[in-house]
Image 1: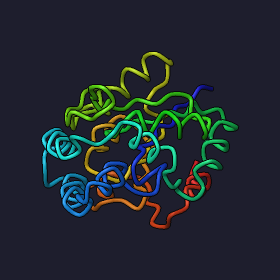
Image 2: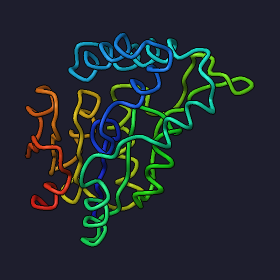
Image 3: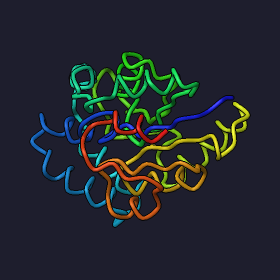
Image 4: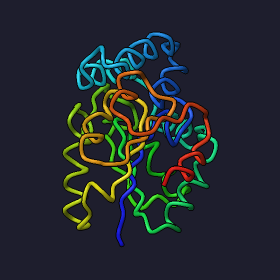
Length: 207
């Protein structure tokens, strides 16, 4: 039987928020992190918060972005949970409201089957402060998971979703197994299971 597992990236597969790491060399980590925190709690519109945060990254070198993204800390148990789910017949996918610079190398390393995220626009190797992609909106993950289910011929009863913030709510609406991982209260309320320790291997006890 085919099954689908969809993971959020920031603060789920990866331990932290990519955009906060990117803001650090500019001395803007606290400012960006405070916006991220409010967006994940559902207090801000995700699209507006993303656009405003990326605008603060203008002037950062793309090479610096890629170097930071190549050295992001993995969440404990990330490699084991991906391998374990694949052994159980799951197609494992990552949906991120963050950036391909981060999701692509990490997901290749972890053996994740596909990653969907946004693109940081640059000109001549310098970030312009603009962002584009299919994961920019609060409903984006829900729309994409329905498309994935149709493509793979998988129903919600065979779909597992794992996330931590408000922008994961839309994909939670299309899965029968919903894991809130070290999550904001708004997501815990929509979950079937809550994992409150930073160890993704706990998910293998649920499936």
